[in-house]
Length: 316
Image 1: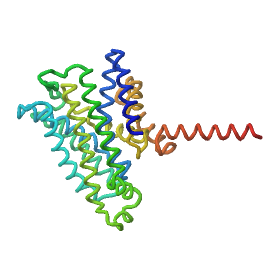
Image 2 (image 1 turned 30 degrees about the vertical axis):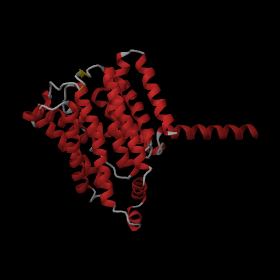
Image 3 (image 1 turned 60 degrees about the horizontal axis):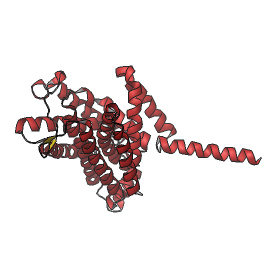
Image 4 (image 1 turned 90 degrees about the horizontal axis):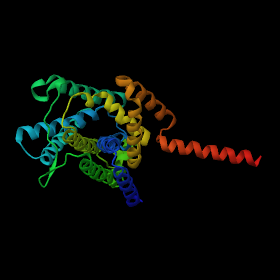
């Protein structure tokens, strides 16, 4: 099943890229970039049951880290992404060590505070990040001396990384660790009673989640070539949570569909400007209340109910 899904995804990407439409190709790149942090959030929120509103911070740290490491050390883009990802993994582990002492809305508030602090640092540390003026001059990735500047080249790089993340996430949630994650999401006391080190598992998944975010951020930095604090604010964390909610909290493949759905909705909501966050918030509330297993499964359940009612009506 997984093999056919990967082939179907690859076929859809090839079909869209074959159109040669620059807007469509750039949109696919953005979807791939946002799929990485969304999958990371699904691992910690959907499968482990720990709400996080700070994943935009990990995404931003990965982006700024890659850009600054490349500038300071003069290393190739692939290396600065790897170093930045390692740095964010350590930060995510440390944040997990701190915040997982809390539960429920206290945990959500702690991760929200982390995201706000990081975003303020991006804005106020002018000498390092460029502040509101932004960080410019980030070179594109290169491979064997060839610059990967075009959208088509980055489409291949981003989606190869995204597919690897999908497969890694799927393998993780079906492994013994994945069973422990689900047990923690259901009841931490029960998970602990059968020998699971609950705190260590939660910190591990937070670290893996941070790695996915950092990879997406590093690729984003080299794709855009310019960084500013705006894309890494709390609004993006809410958007990521909405992507996971739409796709299904405990469904890696569904999250990818959620990213596609929200990215396309975002294009429609662009005229709203900063007020689009209101629409995202309303959509999140509706999704959680009426489609707790994801929008697609919710629609399928409603369609099945309608068919049953139609069948019952015809038999009377």
